[in-house]
Length: 239
Length: 122
Image (cartoon, rainbow over all chains, first blue to last red; front, side):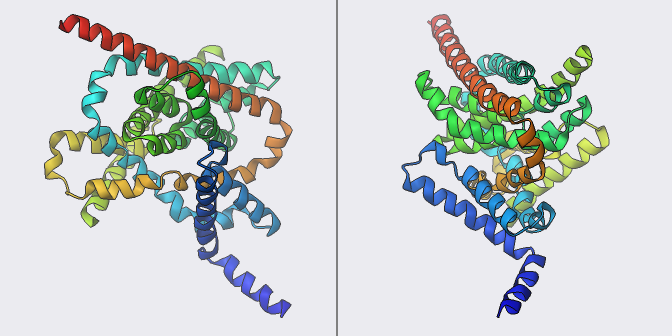
């Protein structure tokens, strides 16, 4: 019997189906808990799913490559979904046009706050130089952040982790912060989540309203472009 | 649906090619997003009619799509545990500070700007 289970495990572990299915299950489990607890932001479904999956990988001694063979089918859709963000942006074009100047000014303020707070706090807490460079692009979308990190001398794989954790932190704590500062303007909520927490913040903003989602998508894209141009120049200046 | 999905993938493909050829530090899908946005501006009525539902399907589950990348945390657990203090400080304080500053700035500028628009309109 135990041999049969081992054989079954070897078979399942080799196919992408197992971890693909477990990823979907873990996310739906996270979404179920989230709904059951009155959408408490601390129970963010992405966070729950990541914790559950990391735990499962650890206890089954499965490495990330094996996991990713299955999960890549979900990961792939991130590209097309990013492209599709153009649709809510287009639908809200009239509002975006009207708020053009506030958007550009807020973007510059938010982007600089994200970079300087990351570098400043890491330095104050005794982080080494490589850590400062790794964390500097933490607020922008993963592929741009990894590219910049590599360019300025950080560790791209750790940057990817920081980016995801930043996104989750924003999605978890953003509502609380914005509520306590009485920021109820949907455009401002979208901008804040998009600038600080890229796609994961945008995913959270879309759940609130289409308007907040459109502004978050816009903020994420603009912040990605802005940081990609600004940060290598800043890093060069300080080196 | 098929036409819409093809269009979305086509935008991404062109975006990937553009970034590879020009060596831009921007990822292909972001260029693809700009491209689709331009196509919508040029004539939304000429694009597949179900583009909204195809895009809506992808965006409804946007949060799920970040899970595989998030599980990537597992590859850096050691480094994460070693430098946990600066990393946690940067991520928690830095992110919440950025949200606060950005949210307040946008709400303030939006009100000022709209107020100014109304005044000049009168």
